[in-house]
Length: 252
Image (cartoon, rainbow, N blue to C red; front, top):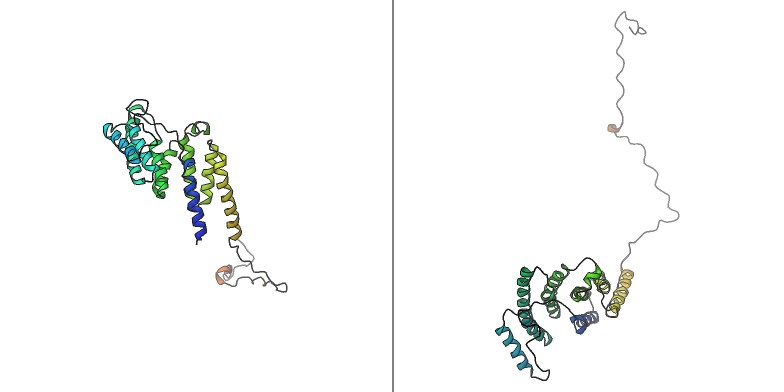
């Protein structure tokens, strides 16, 4: 049974993974609007005014993936995960439509959905969307490293596995994160913790009990040959008695 301290440690570790470092992404998003974002606001504006402008942008341009993406990012940052998921679902729908038109696959919708579900500690949903991202990952690391969504998906999956005490797969995903160009300083502390826990887990694993034989014990004698009638071959049939007047030595 996991101690309260270990649960707190795991929760804190996952929270750290989902902060700024775990939010890096460079996904491709198709927009029907102009190249420059049309929703601009000052950081000094009240949060309500900012949200209202983002909502109005989605109402004015319901088919603009960038508008929905900005609204989802806002909800995610302020911890409104349910609203963020709703916005990202719309982003993913628009990306699917774009994929059918230009034959290009996009990772941004699934990655943001996976990240938001992970923050909400809805791990099954998070893993489902993050795996959708990894289904598009190129086989060669040099190509996969061009899209940060791939390595960040590995990082989040690793953090989720670690939080659920699945140490071996967590370590594999952290290693892949590094292989795809991720910051080694982010993953190395996790890997060191995993290696330490695997070491102590192996030491605490019960070993099979071996009962030593007493020094003066005499080995048991070998069993006698089987006396089972079924294992004894039947005797040969006796030769027939010679007929009267027949020479027993005559073989003709």
